[in-house]
Amino acid sequence: MPEYRKVRAKVSFSALCRDPGLCAEVAVTARRRLDVDGAIVFSDILLALEPLGFRLEYAPGGPKILNPVRRPSCLKRLHEADPAALEFIADAVRATRSALPAAIPLIGFSGAPFTLASYAIEGGSSRNFQKTKAFLYRHPEAWSELLAMISRALIGLLKSQASAGAQALQLFDSWVGCLSPSDYRARVLPHTRRVIRALPAGVPVIHFGTGTGGLLEAMRDAGGDVIGLDPTVSLAAARKRLGSGVAVQGNLDPCVLLSDRRLIRREVRRILSEGGGRGHVFNLGHGVLPSTPVDHVRALVDFVHEA
Image (tube, rainbow, N blue to C red; front, side, top):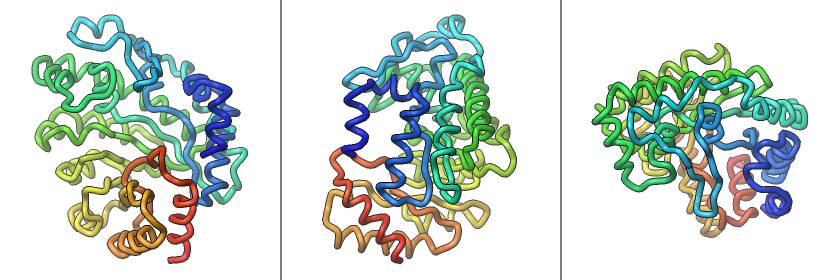
């Protein structure tokens, strides 16, 4: 969005994330421009690692952890997160909630324990998560200790967002689809469940992952009022697998927005038909791609509202 680029021309991404006023401006501008039915706080999942002792850098090629965990002994340099260290995120929630119309709900969020642990071990993005899986298999006790420490930090972060005015919370497990169902259940599910169960009653939790078609039942068992679905899963089939106890969110392929309006409208109707009405939050199956025309996103929203 041009409005976002104008802000970013003045400040770095890291500085923007730490400025509650600018975070609110970016979030509220996007909500108003696109006419979506909810807003999400502007932040980044990796910020949750800094209070634990990780050094984070937003480099041109993507975010980097400068002191990754590669051996169990690396855990000795970490420490429990100071709840006040990320108060600027709660302040961003307050500023955004104050600037939004009362009828527009605000979503807070964090990364999930596995995805943050993977960043902490890999040191950045990865294709095969070789370092993460090697650590998981070779050092199961240290793996559990790392996820437990991250989970405690996430509980504090998410609770603070709810207290500041976020009316729903989303947990992003962007990388967990690399695991087998058995590994997920044994080595990840208990930690994710601990986070979700610790959150305030009455604040809906959206539990989202990518590449997780083989993990849906396990993710449901880990918790969440809504299971977010990526584009590789049939929405109708997922609803049958998950049962009536949870809602679903998704799951239009973001690349559809690179096509024309006729195809966008057709795909919107297909998704809405598969979603089955109640208990479905229409959304993309992953983030908006940078090359997406803003007018196509607005057209998407209009098509959903029309239908």
